[in-house]
Length: 312
Image (cartoon, rainbow, N blue to C red; front, side, top):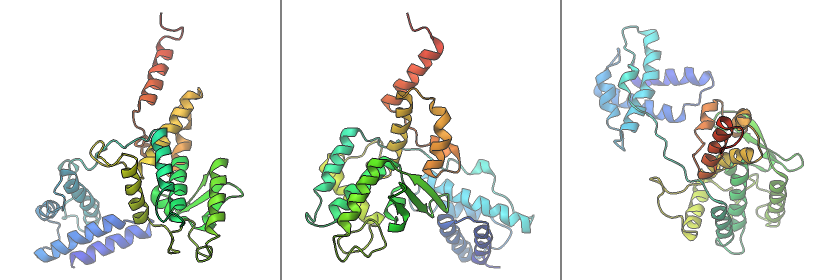
């Protein structure tokens, strides 16, 4: 059997169990095309796997390791049907992830970004208000940028103050409650967007001047312009500040507010995890960055624990 047929059979079985495997699927199909071109057959030849993995476009150790890790899961599947087919040892994979510190926006950064969004072109079009509104939504809700741009009119219930996120990263559907100030801002945006006759019948909530829904490419482009206007157009920790960093900022500010209110943040992490759409709580901890404010709060908690009567 051709490798592409084996990979497609594997993907079909996994997807029937609810896994999307969009990126993994493309990578595995790339491996299958390479293995078929090499003329190899079962059992799986590990040297071919590593040879193909080392052809990762970036050439980085992480990219190579990710390729091997994806094929390893496939190798487990093959081993079930052909015990002579080896399973790739985990100790031969290497590090598959690294955490580049995100940029945590200050209140002044956010204010400047919102002002710059208002100044976008066209001056009398819907684009400036669209970008400004969606930035405010990202800051206040922690939504993934891709989730925000895909929202339809029916996804936002301004009477109950809930946003329905469909087909998110980990859930088919989740409800995201929003603050009253966000509700009022979205109501204002809806009123304005409906004044544009070509736009008001569009299903997408966030629109551009051509009547089409905002997409992530257009949002990223607008933010690149904003970033340059507010002086953030330089790499920080190895990359430029991103729209996605507003989600990281949301998490840090939320935990900071719990500390400032005297609450035990540990008790609320599970709720925050579900709110963000995470299935594993460790994914939520991934978003926590050691900001000066959080480090100060942590130091104070440690002082209170060690010296309940205060430091003399």
